[in-house]
Picture 1 (tube, rainbow, N blue to C red):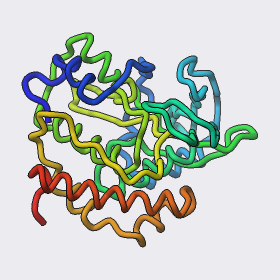
Picture 2 (tube, rainbow, N blue to C red):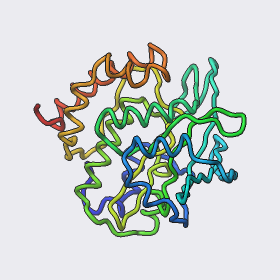
Picture 3 (cartoon, rainbow, N blue to C red):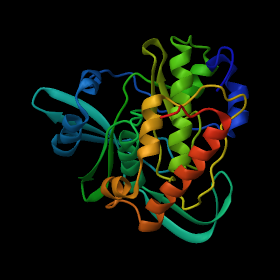
Picture 4 (cartoon, one colour):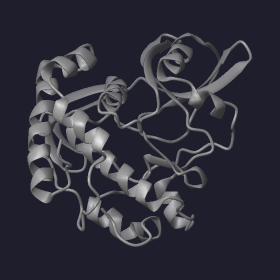
Length: 275
């Protein structure tokens, strides 16, 4: 998808993707990194059930998220809590002008579930939980990570460039399917020394357009075969089963409409492996 030393040339990539400067969410704590190796189901249980021992303002982010410290037994971990739930029928400006606007914590959970349904695995584990008297999304805090934007500015070295390009293509696929209007390199987290990449901030996704945008030029990295199979196999039953409690019928139908458009586009570009 990109050529040369990708992160060091991120300025060009930002222009190509139409990305903007955004918030840096990083942490210098490492108390829960070992929990990241747990299966998703176990991590979901921890996020839902662990005792809340501290809640603090993050201090950044227009959705005013909270950082929550959780403890169960001798395990302590942090997570990010959002309770944003805004919907308007007025003209709004996101990455474009649009009639109607929504910014909802439910979309954070929906993005996580669809990410796993598509075998992408880049969105941190996210669940619904009540903190205090507020219902919201609770997502695992990625410790010791920096934003892709910051990594580019600091000229951090790339480990496996092929893997990075493949993951950026998976990010593109997910963003097109969820109609994400808020992707920028401030909400892509990385640990360059471990070749890890995470996608956060999806509360403005799941528009009902069926349009998809092509990947930035020069796009040469094909979609991961496992992701390709999952995208091709996606059907109404799977979408309704995973997202029926989070999204409207129209939103769920729009995911499949965009999938059809995306498959056709990527096949024409030679970027979607054959089954």
